[in-house]
Length: 286
Image (cartoon, rainbow, N blue to C red; front, side, top):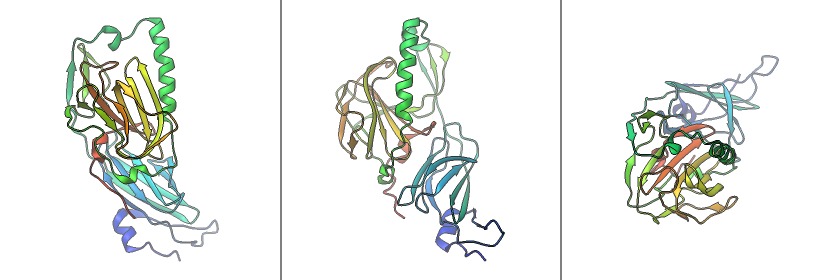
């Protein structure tokens, strides 16, 4: 018969299913342990610990692989459905964790007075430029560094900021409804130091982008990527490693911005997350 999970693993991952069988139907080895913690809400996250290099399925789709130390991170999109199922699989078996995802509390934000080309571009040359910029940004967001920077917990990237917009708000630009705002806007004067909120790999760093102005992306491990928009100066280069608290840029009002601020964003493999939910959490330990 298969050995049961430890009491600690069961408590941490309830409700949990963990059964492993050989092709002949005889029980094999014990399924992997699984512990999980985080913010189970739209735009939230979970950080887990399990067997090293276990395959992590989220809602029936293979999404990531645990690190050599057994750590992994997943995210719940701004528009996540009300439940999510996570399955951890190793050659010895699998463990499953089903969670309820609470609805987010999102604002409606109206911004008027923007140049029309910043809202609905029509110029062919600009559209071509946006396409090439989009491909470069897409490559940056696709980074999946084998790191565990997300385990540290996060600090704010700028000090003394006024939060001028929350994550997830529906934006109406010049009276035209647009997609939700996937960032946290931190209003600070131009030239304010911007520091890495957690360690990671710089996977994109460019100035002069149409929408973002100066943009830096950091992969904190396994595709958990944070973004910093509207920067006036960038002090890091792609491919370099930064540690938590390291100076990497200065704030500005470049691109589509009505005033000086840093728009702070987070994505996990295409899902839009609220980076502020990780501030003050961690460090995470087994």
